[in-house]
Image (tube, rainbow, N blue to C red; front, side, top):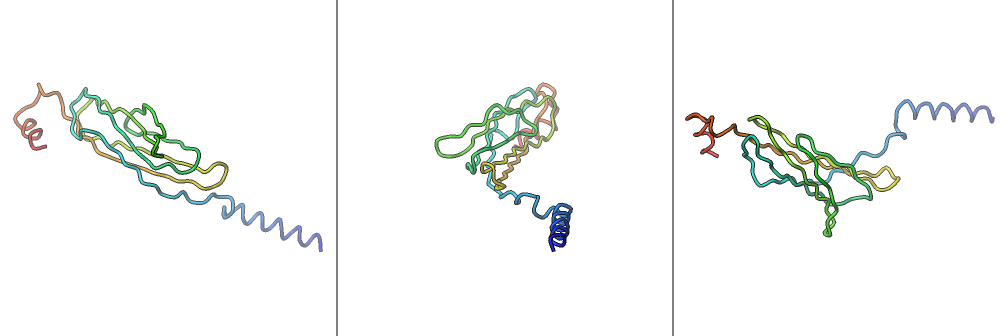
Length: 140
């Protein structure tokens, strides 16, 4: 009988390990992220300061910016993580900037994820504007 239960236990462990049912943590819960900056249209060479704000969940976090350089992320007195970054384009075009944050509750499998995205339009050097470029700039 002992051998029977050993075989059953090994079979169950193999089934769970191969299916990933009990080994994977719970899916992260979504949280809102607000991304903001003062301008949506800048010129080559300008530096734009970006801010992302997320309500705090859990006790630990990891975060990062894609398309921008992270400066800092701090917890403010209102219970929000405030992340600051800079964006300094070298060429004209449309740029997508994204902020991602993952928060976790200690050693448990509880996690929260947030993502905020924005688009920044970068114009070329104004001394190189032709009639068409100037008309585009004025339309914004």
